[in-house]
Every structure is written in C-alpha cells, then in structure tokens.
Image 1 (tube, helix red, strand yellow):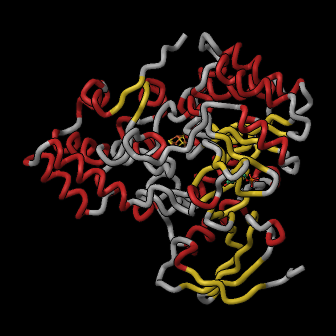
Image 2: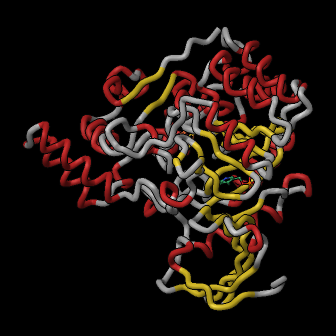
Image 3: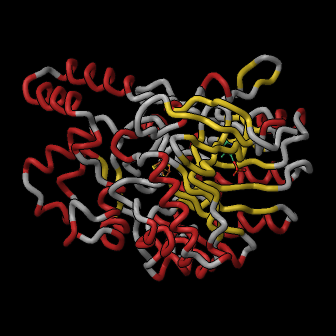
Amino acid sequence: MQKFKSYTLNKLEKIPQLSGLSEEQMEEIKIVSSIYPFKTNNYVLENLIDWNNIPNDPIFRLNFPHKEMLIPEHFEQLKRVRATGTKEELKEVIYNIRMKLNPHPAGQKELNGAFLEEKKLEGIQHKYKDILLFFPSQSQTCHAYCTFCFRWPQFINDLDFKIQSKEIDPLLKYLSENPQITEVLFTGGDPMIMNSRVLDSYIEPLLKVDSIKTIRIGTKALSYWPYKFTTDEDAEGMLNVLRKITKAGKHLGFMAHFNHPKELEPPVVKEAIDKLRSIGAVIRTQSPLLRFINNDAKTWTTMWEKQVQLGCIPYYMFLPRDTGAQHYFAETLENAHKLYTEAIRNCSGLASTAKGPVMSMTHGKVEILGVKNNSYTLRYVKHRDHSKTFKTFIAEPITPNPMWIDDLVEVKEEVPNY
Ligand SMILES: *Cc1c(COP(=O)(O)O)cnc(C)c1O
Ligand code: SF4
C-alpha cells in the first residue's frame, strides 16, 4: 500500500527532490506560494515529474509555482517585504495582492446562488437550468494543487471566499422544489479527497431523489492520487459507495481532470480507471489549454487518443479563467482555436469528442468555432438563460491579441436564432 504523504509550503525544505535547487529558486517558489496555495505529494514527486527536466517539465510547471506567475511588480514587492518587513506588513501585502487577482471571477458569488425562501444556500451553485454544483465542506482541498487553479480561493482560510456546505438537507429541499434539476455535480477542491463514510452521507440521501438522474464527480484524483481507487485502505469502500449510484439506475459521471499525457502513463492509472469502469462509471476528461504545460497540438492528440484507449471520453478543452495567473498561462484565442483544430484533425473519430476551446464566463460556456479577419464566430455551449444555449454569435476584439471573452464584443447574432 502506498502511504499518502503531502507537502505544503512549510514543508518545502523536506521535499527530497528539491535538494538540487538553488537558494534563489527555493525563494522564488516560496514567494509565489505565499500568494497561490502550494501542495504536492509523494506520488506526483515520484511518478509524474521528470526531475532531469526541471524547471521545464510540464508536471513540474503544473504543480510547482514559478516566478512568472506573478507580475514583476507583485513579485518584487513580496520579495522586499519578506526580507525587510514585519509579519503584519507581509500579511497585508499578501492580502492586497490576492484581492487584485480576481478571486471570484464570472460573478460566481453574486450570480450563481441557490435560494430557499430568499435565504442563500451555502456550498451550492445553480447556474444552468438542469444541473447543480455542490461543494461539500470536506472536499475543499485536493491531493496536490495545480498552479493555474481558478478555485485557489477555496484553499485559503483567511479569504472570505469559500463556497462550501456541511449539510445535505438544504440541498435536498432545494432539489425537491426544483424538479427540473436532473444532475448534481460534486466539486471542490476535489470530492475524491473525502473518505467513503463522508461521501456516503451525501450520496445515500441523494439516491432517493427521483428527479436526479445523474451524479457527477469532478476530480483530479486519477492524476494526483490514483491509489484512491486501487490500494488505499478505503479503496473498496469508495468503490462500494460509488457503485450504489449505478445500482440505483443513475448515471455516474466522472469528470476527470488530466492536463498532460504523462499523467496517463503510470500503470496504476489504468488500474484505477478499470476499477471505476467496473462499477459502471463513465469517465469524461477535461483540461484547460495552458502555456508551458500543454500548448502543443500533438500533446492533445496524444492525450485524447490515450484516454480513449484507457476507456475515457474526451469532453472539454477549456481556456484558463481570468483569475490568478491567467496572464501567464493563457494562449490567444486565435492560437487556441488553431491548436484545437489541429489536435482534433489528427485524432480518430472516437478521440475527437472534446468541445473546445471553451471559456466558462458570466453568462455561460462559450466555444470558439472559428476566427477569420479578426472576426470570431462563437457559440454558447451552455447559457444561464436556457433559451440561448447553442446560440451562435459573431464578436470582434477590442484589444489586440484577445485572450478571453472580455477582450471581445458581440457584434451580431448568427443563425440559428430560433
Ligand atoms: C460547466 C458547468 C456545468 C456542467 O456543464 P456541462 O456542459 O453539462 O458539462 C455545470 N455547472 C456549472 C456552473 C458549470 O460551469
Ligand atoms: S485539482 Fe482542480 S481544484 Fe484542485 S488544484 Fe487542481 S484545478 Fe484546482
């Protein structure tokens, strides 16, 4: 059995693989980790990162913060205050920088709330008609953290930005009042950080709700800790709880987060996928497109083909959200569309199922369909106003090299406009 061993900022010096780094490199990691939460674990360190290829190794970039994630002004300010300031000053600088990083983009807090008798429910987001996001309080962390994570405010205790719920009752009540909701998506953090007993306390009551046809689990455990489903002491227990979902005749959808084909290579990943498929789970995969990690068409083709071989279904290619280090990770919209097209073109039909490139923004999820002469054809693959879902529209840039939907302005609706 593999024992889970995690490392956060205060245990950075204890990571054996970092012993070759210079003091300056260590200091850089510490500075950036004072803003973005850092966490790694023994599986990632030993199986996913190629230590002969740092700092450019894609999984190192995925998991370890690096200087360029902060704008130079913030980096220098932190460096200075760390060297010469008081604890209080440092705390204030960290807080101020974090607030500038748009910790809750796309109106998540204000717009996506779920209400019962005018009272806002904790840990629930209801943006799209038929699907609800549920944030169990026990899943507000992950087995390791991704540097580009747009959920990073969830992991920081002193920011008042957590979305979480300890209780299932308000959720059940909300579902009974909203029978149009057919799906509940467990998210976080990573719900697969929960143990089987806690997960069961949420799943068991949900199974009795007839209107719920699908339970989805958004997770990166297959990448960051696949033992969760294989050799962990609680692995059988987890599988037993999850099996109840399919036994009850509901769809069990795993939304697995993989950013690079390297994450699919260790044999234990196949074992974990086989276990999940054996209980009837359907595993769909998603990832953002990220500079320095996977911004290469061949990487995506390889990743999607390999996923299909393992029995997964490619589902979304996202663009990194406008929170945190977007300036560092984002490609231009045009490059993203080119790369997506090239990647899909080289895939077998079965591996070309991913929608993309997709931006998740205030009104919905928007897919880039084409770019020509500075004119962007876009489509809402999902819109909070259900009648606009799948509407196509044309937009033009308001800045050179647009990287996000805010850099465009809608100029006209396209067909179909029913
Ligand atoms: C993406 C998303 C979903 C799920 O969307 P699908 O396209 O059905 O996978 C649900 N709720 C929110 C808030 C989302 O952002
Ligand atoms: S696994 Fe998901 S929630 Fe966790 S750090 Fe990575 S992107 Fe964020």
